[in-house]
Length: 268
Ligand SMILES: [Zn+2]
Ligand SMILES: [Zn+2]
Image (cartoon, rainbow, N blue to C red):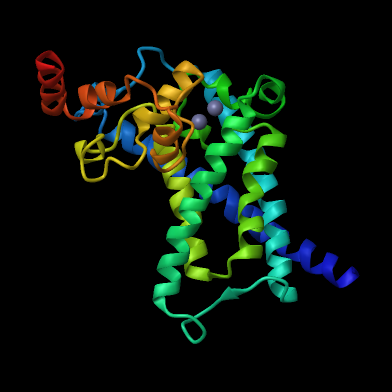
């Protein structure tokens, strides 16, 4: 027991730094991209007339730093479990090939999207909302800094996914690293407040099955609809996608497609 505790205590600081720096770098990079390309066209892609206040951003940063701390406490459990041989993390390609890496990464993202959709919808239940999810929705006009802006109970729910998943699916360390990178990048993109996805991410286009900034921003603006994280599948299947999503995304990111949609609507 003391050995376990010692492993945990010695591993935790490094994991906490990685989780915190990952959030800070991703959010700062997004804020820098918005600032650098604002006049070059991003200003036209701003999603809400309202601006986030300094108070909003301060709350988002502080809550996100606290969530990174909670994620690191949970992540260190995974580290100890790997050390003890309770769960398997592959290194190199001696035991499994690149195909396992690719398929397990795809499966993990789909599983996380499903976990996120259903826990998110549950947290919107009036009995759970205030305790779990109310803090995240204080950001009516979110910024990239809101990526991890969760209450303590919500951060535990969100941070529990990786430890739970790894118990059932042995992962390659590179796949796990890629998952964590995709997760934070997609998260800051969803909260950027300015549509940064190209027109090819529009509904009906070849990347249209992915969520966009408009998709998650509508969730924050309205407090309902669009509960998914990476993909639109669950929202489409459960009828929870915002009815104006297509129109709003196209009007901002694909004006020509918006015109075609309008013409089709007039014709029908
Ligand atoms: Zn929500
Ligand atoms: Zn959000």
